[in-house]
Image (cartoon, one colour):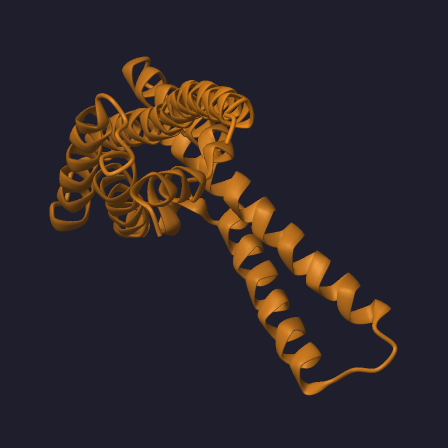
Length: 226
């Protein structure tokens, strides 16, 4: 496989469409930070947990509906139903009693952020840099910062307001790193296509000139008398 082929494969393998998730993370992070500044950190955290609980209930209901729609129930269907109902019960607990969830939320959130930051770092170093993307180090920088903040959240206990601010900042940093990856991947892909078009045009011109010269030589040979 050629070097240029491997580059375009690396660029295409990165899903630019995930930028929507990063935008949602950015707004959520800003809400956490701004809300805490105005003394609404605990309320925002409780609302966030309840929203997650509602999403879990929806997942459980979808599993139940899918189970009821299947005429023939297999063991796998029953397992999916049990898991779905368990998730729905967890969602109900999230809505009914968000405070205990908030108390352990830093561990759950920190682990998720650490995983997401590692994905950003791998994408910047393993995908964008080999593909020739400019400023690949920008997303790498924010990925490293998000990783450090995620570890900080998991390893240290902070006051609720401080924790909410740190979570908000971590969301903002992680979203910037993710959006940078998506934008840089898109630009690298456009640059590759533009450079490939220039190369194809140049190759076509050379081939056309060579064929024309070959045709002239053939005509000259036909005029030779023996």
